[in-house]
Image (cartoon, rainbow, N blue to C red):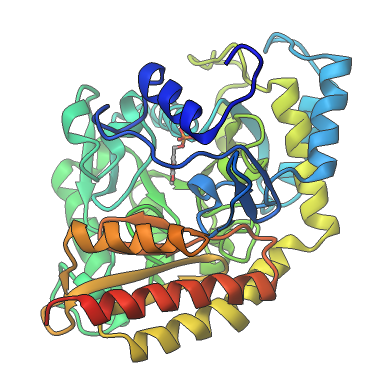
Length: 441
Ligand code: PLP
């Protein structure tokens, strides 16, 4: 409507007619309207609210509409709304400084991008130029973004229709519940996954491999927290063969796991870190690459063959500075760790013990997955119709869930309170109990 008097129905009609959506057949269009949001809640035009257990695309780590971040974006817009990338700008430098302050010693520079895909794209480019090598090894169970190299580095179905970039090789990572290695313990899974990775590296020609690119905790693939020692083993393989280790922290970073960076939980330091999403809670599109000193120095005299008009866009940078400041001041990362350890973890373990649909729960911080299975013995995933019912019932009962394949991911904002977490978990439990009661035996 020209006067802006939208209703849920007119928004849906306009959207379905005019907007082309990601990763979808355009006949299967969104059924959910969001008109506004605050903290961990979203609402539609009719004023119905939902508790957001998805953080949208697992990016609103600070919740919606944090007043300090909104004010910082407004203030920056009034001061300087855009600037070319090859200029020096105070807000951009401040954003780099804020991010580096949480990185381990040895990281000295930040390259800013528009989001996570181009962060991975440019990290791969840096590794290739730095090593003079070509190939990139990544995991089958992964998502790295939708641009040329990032989508081919991706392991899941989204790679297959997009395989135009060259030089990509995949390996299986650890996933004990559905082990590729006949493992029965985390120790076996880790050791065998490492042996497999090293054999892939050797068989591909170790001297041709520029980078190993892994999500520290594969997210969309199922919140696959690596077993103790796995990432340290990957670091050793990378070092043994002179390969750059890139850890993708686009989803896992900035508080999600209860740490600033997820790799801190695994006693490992990569050479390049890619980030996006939580760095500014997605208020303005932004991502980037944290660069260790050795790789940064490669480009002191050599031209870096990459760039973006909006690299370090001031509105995104202002949102980064304000987001990280708010996360520090309000101890948001500590909150994520505490909610995971004291509320979500215990509740999900209780659910797994009581509900026959639940095959496994796993996670850390505010980053959890519940695997739903038709049969606990065979671990056969529930069919899509069951997942559709889970999602519909959650929405009906006031919870916005994140579902992927046969899983519900419990991924609320890092600022969620214990009370909100209990509220959402109670809805989830009631939905899964009802679906389990209805499921065919
Ligand atoms: N890497 C990971 C681990 C992600 O989860 C995502 C997005 O979900 C991306 C990269 C791509 O980020 P973007 O969609 O901002 O390009």
